[in-house]
Image 1 (tube, rainbow, N blue to C red):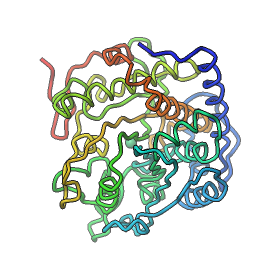
Image 2 (image 1 turned 30 degrees about the vertical axis):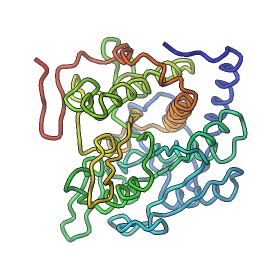
Image 3 (image 1 turned 120 degrees about the vertical axis):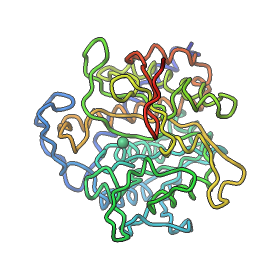
Image 4 (image 1 turned 135 degrees about the vertical axis):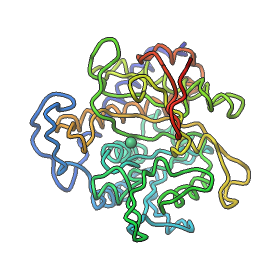
Length: 381
Ligand SMILES: [Zn+2]
């Protein structure tokens, strides 16, 4: 059940959000945006042109611009300035975080942990810009309720190389998937330990991670999926119900039910549940947003055992499989911005917490046959 605000309020809110999303896709890139070649989403021809994708230099320039022009106190910092023990990427790049808001609870928003999944960066820059400049009551509410910690490019090395991983600089050239690198006794890559320490300083109330997947069609209908809604420890699966008395098992599903309902109103967004191998739920503990829910202590940095619920979004199309057409850029950014805005507002107003978590079952998905874990597949009998 959605707890409806008054109808006029809802209408006003939707209008304001749509306007913000339209602005968001106009975000300038220093490289310039080539003419749109293919109206389809995503381009099945695979004419990926990465010239339209934000580089690390673009990130720094845009963060600087947002900080200088914001009305509501956006602060851009690096982990070196924050003072984490490990503070740069494997290749020595600064790791950037922007904060905005004065609310008592922290919210962690990260994108592009996989370097070849570009639009998390631009989506988060767009949301950051709104948080920093938009004076409407919705955005006021968000700034009063939360302090946002925005990490638009978690993996700058992989982003510059246009690959999923970061590359170890210890002579091994080993490629590390940063989204499998959090866990007890882990942190192979510098980025992981740096952001983990920052996370223990922030102690967020919840987190969202933005990804891309390959082309996908909806189970049963065959329609193109534009956005998959993911929880990296499967609801009702082997792990999540045992955390915090099952609270995250409930809240993560409520978060996605809310996004699913709200985004259905905008059009041109077709959602389903994120699954792998056709019919498997993921239950991967080494993922960053999984590890946040598990709340482990490393080097005594999290002695209180802080943990937080977390979800992720997967836009269809990435640069490596050639499935990211030009037209997809605007649509991908728009749907991520809308999803984030609706989720954040829903959390701040309490609408999310009123949703029926059982409706997670209503979001399109293949019948579940098992769980993909870090070490293999657990079939469901
Ligand atoms: Zn990813």
